[in-house]
Image 1 (spheres, rainbow, N blue to C red):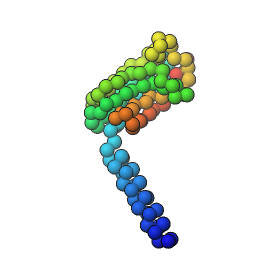
Image 2: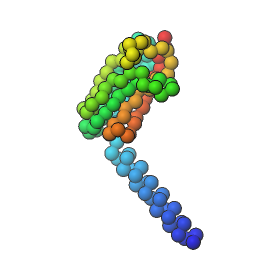
Image 3: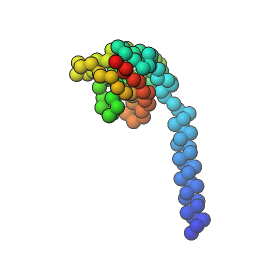
Image 4: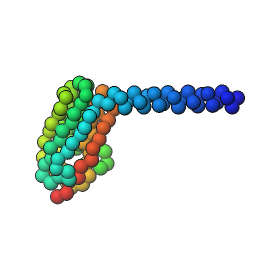
Length: 118
């Protein structure tokens, strides 16, 4: 009985390792850069991709609410944006913590944090 449990446990561990390695090897989002960071009036955002995939790029506040959708469509090798703190509803984003969130293929997500000082 102990041997069967050990074999099952090791098999599950090997499967998890294989999936993790596969995800690492097939990294779609290369880099997310935000400049300046922290920001005041605006920031420039660049996202690089290793392949073309359906992509949504958003700005989220510290609570995880989407305040601005920057892009929705097929990615290119490089996407570049300038965010001037204007939210989707037309208001100006207040000072605080925000995240640039890149969701691709509807399930994988990469994030990078930024800070608005004033």
